[in-house]
Amino acid sequence: MRAWRKPRRALLTEQRITAPREKRQNGNEAITGLPEQVILSPTDQRTLGFYWPFKGEYDPRALVRTLNRQGMRLALLVVVEKARPLISKAWLPNGRMEPGV
Figure (cartoon, rainbow, N blue to C red):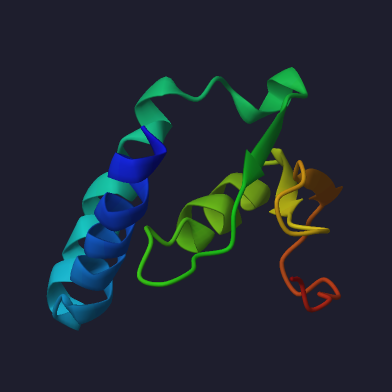
């Protein structure tokens, strides 16, 4: 699996990075609309974890800002150390950010 995953991941990353901006933006908009159909009401006091986009990945920031305005609690997934489990930190728009790994 590792032998397959590493070159496949590199290929997919390259495809995301080299995709035209409009294509990535259209993809982001299409994906952003989907969670609204499956996420429970923000008043149910759940916390939604999300990641900061990297290397052309889907950009969830528009969605999480909308959910924040609706009252949902948010947590940013953080890489503390390479090859170690992620941790989550409470996140608010315009909150203080620290550089990660």
